[in-house]
Image (cartoon, helix red, strand yellow):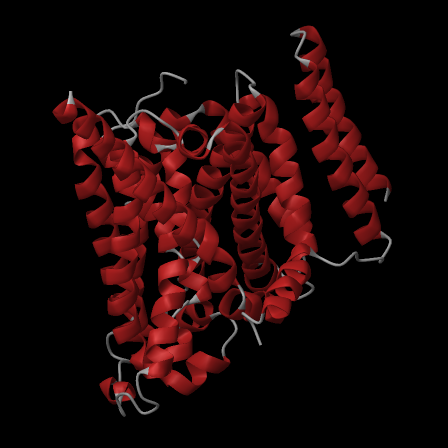
Length: 70
Length: 362
């Protein structure tokens, strides 16, 4: 947990200070924060041993529902 | 669009490296057992035709990326929505290749090291390459991709005394069904994934060579895949090939008096690295165009971080990885690789015919 948080803090601080210095558009901040937040949330859940249903499972489920995959 | 330009040879090597990617460890035609050579040939023809569709789309829409073509043909709203689906698809491919690479290295080469460390270090290097731009990626491919066939040849020739050519028999024991299935798998992986190159084709300095480049890269991959298959089947036999988790690793262990295991790792490192770089570049570039951001580099770190996390999240274990790649991936890829590109081709052709008709009428 601590290592994951440390890695994410380093990555975010390194990028955000660059964004602030270059006065980036709000949409850059928004998409950056969204991707990083999703990554951090999933990482912490995986580290805690609470694996959320993966996209591979969702896709397989959808294809099974459509009858494409048995 | 950025002014970066890549030469024909650079694009050919990028395409070949991309196609080779993780094919070396996933063996998309293995379900056809000892008839996989036929599946490789049939899949190669189909794959070349599919790449031909992508090339035709690029030639009909010169200097336009996939996102721009989608917006032009489907309208801004639908075009952007489909672009977002493609961004997901490119991120997904990158994650799967990360996982293939991590799974192989962490279970074969350095089993004491956690997979996330292997993938994380690899990702950090790739972000640097992607941020350096298309030209650097092209030059890196010039430097590294020629190593791939050389390594395959070294391993093939090292095992020359071990080959047993009766392993090809009996031919078509289970009929053509498994062969067609494997051939379809070979079309979707790796040929269909070259749809990502629709984000790179505008950077080619001589557009006239595009058809030749695509055809040659497909031909080279088919030849190399055949060589790899002949080596695997004649050394291991179809039964052991089916049961082995990582065939290239097993093959490399059988060479008497030589340790060529690192060469297999190098092949995966180069092929996988190029494939991931191209996919992340395509995703970052597409996302920056959808959102109207001037430089794709602002998003590469976030996208790569997401890819690394997704690569760990996507499968629970190596068996799920192989099973999903074989059973689900081909069908999941159909809309991205075939349906939407065919629609784009049809709409591009119709648009090209329309103005000429208008001129005749006037």
